[in-house]
Length: 55
Image (cartoon, rainbow, N blue to C red; front, side):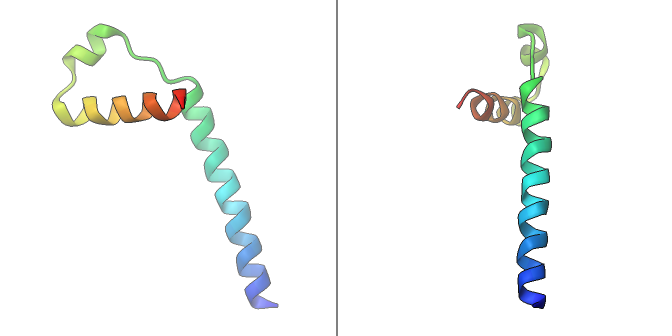
């Protein structure tokens, strides 16, 4: 019974996290000026998020 509850909790938590991530990515927008002003690391993360958003 405890195992089933743990699995159910993980499923619910994963769904909530995925939904929150999808909401954040759906409004993700960067201007060229913003991208140009980013350091290397922030640019790589922004590019990653845009690629995830666009599939």
